[in-house]
Length: 246
Image (spheres, rainbow, N blue to C red):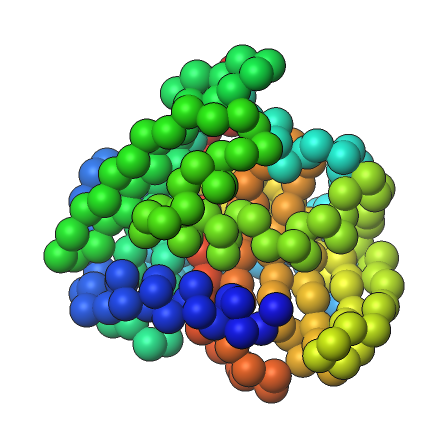
C-alpha cells in the first residue's frame, strides 16, 4: 500500500512543483481552525491559515465529547451546491496549489461535479457525471483524479464506516507493513466544517491522517507521511473554503 501512495504522490509533486504561492480563481478566504485535544482537556486553539497567526485560546467543554455517527455510505452523500476549496502543500514544493470540488447536480442515480487544480503556472479543470460510487474512477487518469484518489479515496476511510466515534476511540490491526493503529485524537473545525481527527500509525509512526465527519463526504484536512518517523507530511490538503449545499 505504501508503494501505491508513493507512486501517486510522485505524480502530484510533479504537478505542483515550482509553485510560489500564487493561486487563481476566487480570492482566498481566511480559515478559522480550532482544535480540541484530549491531552489538554478542554483547550481549543484557534489558528488562521492565511496569516499564520495564532488566535486566543477558548474553552469548549463539549468539543472533545462530540460523537460522530458514520453510516455505510457517508462518503457518497454528495448534495447539489456543495463546494470545497483546499490548499495543497508539501515540504518538497515552494508555495501552495489549490484544489476545488463543486457539486453541480446530484440525483439518486448520479452526481455531476466540477474540479479545478490551480498552480502558479497552470490551471486544470474537469467536469464529470457518474454514479456516486464511480466518481473517482471516472476522474482517474487526470491531475484532478490523482489528487482526489490520494485525498478522498484512501482505503483507510473504510475504518470509520458504520462506526460511532468519539475522541479517545482507538483500535489496532496487524498488516503486511507491521502493526497498524487507528485513533480519533481530537476534534477540529476547518472553514466551518466540524470534524474528527482520525490518525493512522504504522509501527508507532504517523502514516496518514484526516479530519472526517458524516456531515460531509470530503474531509476538512488530510495528510500523508512518506516514511515511518517523518515529522512532516509529504503531502497535505487543508480545507479553506466550504459551502454545505442544499
